Image (cartoon, rainbow, N blue to C red; front, top):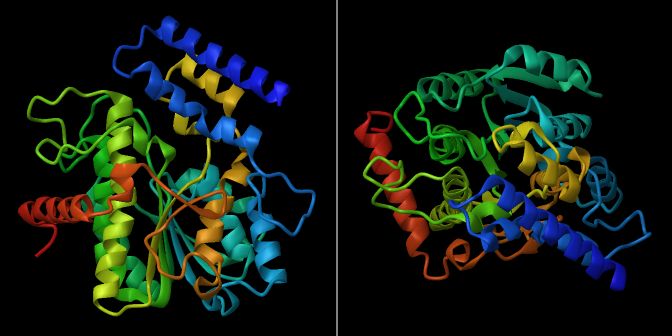
Length: 362
């Protein structure tokens, strides 16, 4: 325990030092220290020498092996169903594509950078099961064209893994006028899901990759795009978009239940991982991330894959709407939990209104 305390104190000191160096005023010390939650949880988490138990340090391949050995793979995995993955050309998205393909599923890898996607696929173990689909989440016309092509070529799908995202970017707008992080991380995925939902098979799955960073910000329903005087901060906007991911997953699950559908919708936090997602955060924050990152890319993909592949009837996926961390059900903050269901409904309605206003939904 003394070693754990020393490690935590060192990490706290490091982040306080970085905050001083950056002269950060847009994010409070308490908010920055939230970055340590996964790190400290990693020090205190249950460890196991049993290779047949999923833990914080399990990899995507571990998830496939354990679920297969315990006969807990979803039926559509066993039957070689179809998975659609956004942002599948790098980081945990690429690992997710690789393992899903290795499981025998046909995987549609959606990416904006086709050259990067092709290079990534060439290194995959079951590349014959992967098809690359061009999709730019910052351009809704590209999202629409990709959805139409997916339906044309695949017919129906079983898993929609909403993995792509940007983080802590400078203020910028998407082609369609949405704040970049909210537009990419939420609106584009909301639109894609709307376009593909009727093509998702019963007992299928919609999995939204959120983050513990949903605690970094809140949702201002009167100024979602920071266009009416709301002060923009990169981390605050990222927090808003990740909170939106959690609320979207819950709202979608509610609507599916209302229609007596067996499709489940869940969200997850993958962990603090060393990936190129940190490229906008500056050298000091990147340094801190390298020091406190609690997972490799392979480990970071584990919860993605668990939520995509586990049999719903034999897991906490069963009722849908859950938020997962380290391949297990967890709890987001109060805003993310949304016990009275007001915020998820407001987000759903505002998202729909904006897309209808701009002619994307009829």
